Length: 337
Ligand code: KG4
Ligand code: ZN
Picture 1 (cartoon, rainbow, N blue to C red):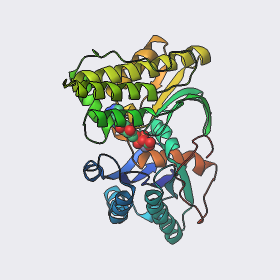
Picture 2: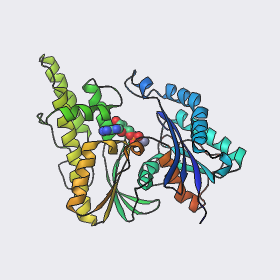
Picture 3: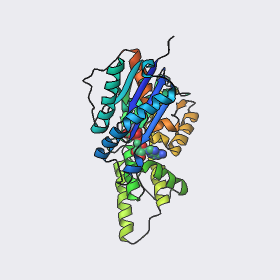
Picture 4: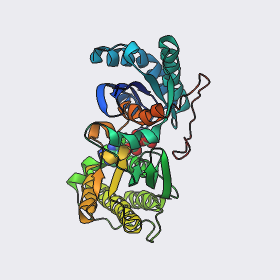
């Protein structure tokens, strides 16, 4: 069978990235230009700066990716791009670049949902999504336990009722005066601490829904009260206490889903899947129930275009192509593509 090469572009947040993916699996080339060092000066992503920086780097990133591969655009079978969800100005930079490539080289255009990209990162290289599978989506804006029946046939079993887990990491990091992005920094501090702070367990129930805003508020209050009393906060211990409670709650809810749906396969997707405590705890859970667990390689957990090329492949096979009126959408439902 002839190989399929997809040229993919990702620019939904603070990474400009391009990749060439063979058959939705092999990463032939990948370039990522991150804006983190700029946004960390502001404590978070500044949308206007993000879109300007994408504009500055997109041509360089595309050029670098294709040059490294030793291939040309003529060798590609399709051009894929993230169209939702994300920062509108940032999405548009990638979308317009993809439209130009599609038009000039006469290649079909494929519109990819960013969260579907995180899910399909589980098909890259040695990883594989085996259907049916349970999925834990843990990103900056999403926290969902899902059931993956087949390609692009996903059902939400439970989700956060308020803050997403990644967002909670980022907000707790601010309380602790840790730099953006909060997740990796909280993880670093947590590794040096002990779970000595008593914090409330979020949603202490048996549903598959989650909630993190109560936990976040209790940390904000705790930090505020300690400050007023003139007491120092032990950042390492508070980071560790927060991470232990938050991840243990995620694990507890996934275990409820495992018992209910009795699957043989499980995947984890989204930026928070880069967290080593989560990776370890989910691996222990998978071993306990003899479940096949897929977690993307670290490089493919955070934003990158390789995952967009992987998610575009099932759409390419179904010939689900986009038109040149494709627009960016800032909010996006991962279950309506
Ligand atoms: O999936 P992602 O790119 O966001 C969305 O697409 O919405 O992930 C970004 C989120 C941020 O909230 C970041 O703090 C978190 O993932 N994150 C982590 C780690 N690395 C990134 N959270 C915990 N531990 C990490 N190592
Ligand atoms: Zn992402």
